[in-house]
Image (tube, rainbow, N blue to C red; front, top):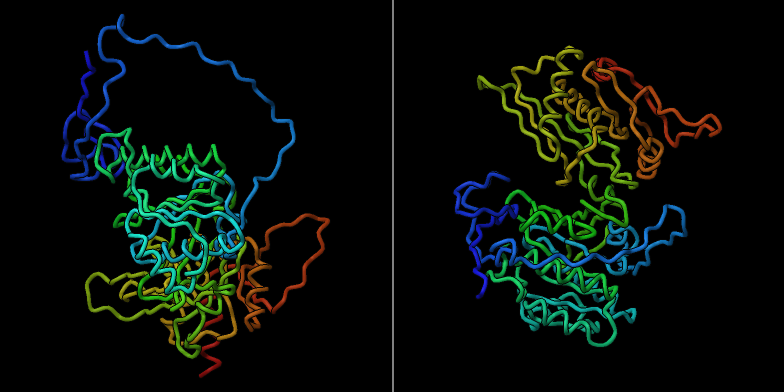
Length: 470
């Protein structure tokens, strides 16, 4: 007697499974995300006497922590910014999930990376489930990569893809664009559903681990920027890379959300041009290009993205409000962080901001997450309120506490070196320094620094500069 298959209701956002339909998913809180899918026969169905007995497990050897360790073999992509994010190249047998908004440049970047690898003699396969082979060739010709020996195919069946890639020499890199269009015969559901995405990803992961091929899975994203499909796929892969950017700006930022073989705090900066994506080796010049030095309310922040120093301009506008509740708007920074800085300026800085609209913007579209931007944001706010421009050759960095104290931040020397390289002559930084070992020699600062220990020092310094100017 054939086993009866029971229908399952699966949430398309988080992958939670229910035995009946519900309007709201209890796991992720999404509405109208539960879809009926054909489920497999339950392995526990039927009486206990008719269930298959569990086979005896195989005993495998256990090893200790001691032993020889080797660095994971990598294949450099030939694109320095991409290698920076991945940790030096593609690890053999690794799975990378690449997500990004539609039209951000994911396929363009992967075409350039696959062409660079193929030109070095590596076997590279580009499998597209969304475009025909002629469309992929047209993009490659537009990028000037039509002569690269990249193997192309337009296929969505995972079993056929694995059988084709298994012929001959294993590819060094296989690109699947995209995982939401793939389907496997072992799952009875439509392509793009949670079970199909999970099953297809599991089959491709098994192929990568057995052959040593690095596989890149392109994933769609939802409205809030999260990679669509079940969250379990992000746990299955070795690295999750997001490709970010605003269509209103010509640069793109790549950052690793998860990376088992490399850092997760590095970023790669690309610039969109007529010839595809161009690497930006010095992003600070890009973000500071065209800044107005004589306008009040602008401050240059010396930040860090991983091991890379980055200088960006923070713009603030403080204007009297005609509303009962003043408006607070921020772009590129945390809204709650701005509220904290405003509260500290009122409580300890002596400023009256309760009847003013406050707008804060990070120029260039970059999003800042580190708390070291507190001092630069506060300087821009004080400058806008007082109408006094800040010195154009000065950078700011430092974390602000609720008591108004300016706390030290890490990698101060790298921030100052980047500022000196771009022509800045002074910096406003915390008075305290992070303690170093007693054996280390004191480093010579590349530019003059003005150390402040409390927010009142910053407000007094800007006010004194105003009186001096008048």
